[in-house]
Image (cartoon, rainbow over all chains, first blue to last red; front, side, top):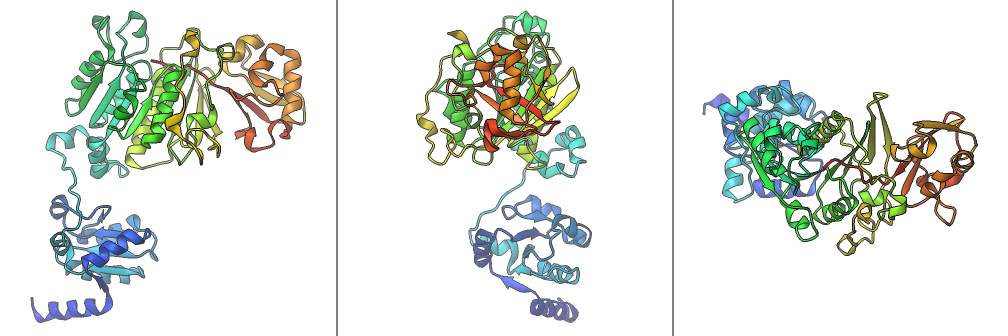
Length: 386
Length: 92
């Protein structure tokens, strides 16, 4: 290092506060406002970085930082490999108006030497970059978002009308693991809408048919075909293995069973239903919005359950509703947009109209309320079967 | 005059109509007007004690009346009432 470099560094050190890694770790844990920015190059980031850090290579700092950290009063912790580039980057941020900039002394090297936690981002292969190129071009998805999708696990309850379009597009999107649970076999009457299946697979288990179709579309993902019904015995173990649950069930017992288990396991459920020309979608995200029991604390008695008969459905309708559900799943996985938490979207295909209702948590909800015990709630017989 | 949106499962009880109009300055009055014409729907909406049934949610515009004033919720002349019954209907 020459005299000029030494002088620049000394000045930067006098202007920018520094934290050692242990102090930085404490501050990250305590200060929810603190933004951590990694200013190293792409290949360095790829080898590992601090959890929850943003990546803004120093060469793009002036161009990208205001988009990624718009609040110039927020505390910003910068780090590089050894603590030099982050000091100089700190000066740049101060010149740009950031008022609370800190550099991590010793950088990522000192952080790992202290045995502190790191994350290694999933690196896309060339084939994955080609397959998901249209996602990579979307800033809200990008490489980090695609990596999240590839590492995500989504369980679909039912491989039928709603599960078919949802699973098809989630597979295409590169959701890394799809679980499908369904005990039925493909029937000729399914083929008017259940697009995962085809005529040659009539009589075959739906989950096996679904796996065949999804794996052919995208061999990059894992499909877990679970030929079973969702029961009290398997529900918790099953949903605990997944990040988001897509509910395509058609009966009250399963709907309540899934609701109560999702509260215990703290898993969001993307709910959909269809009836003739109309459909509904909402997201039950435990403790952030209402659950199914907030709306309906218990299923209706048979005489008040008017919709048990086979009602028929326009074949394309589950396509629309299932894809709305798939969209909500992707938003939840990526943490983008405004998921339908606390909102019920109602779709009327004949009027070609969407309406929305606001849903609230019941403080006295038996599943997610203040004094709730979802593990003690009853399961139900199918009122339609009584 | 309020508009009452009828969910698909209740339409057979109202001659297949997707929506009907109802008169009343409160939700309760508008529902009474509705039940006078379609009495068969009453037991789906109103519990034995006269309150809104636990098996249906009622909204005025986009708001759940449980968090407004229940059956006493005042109605604007162009209000939309939506009935949301528990539906088994899914698509397995």
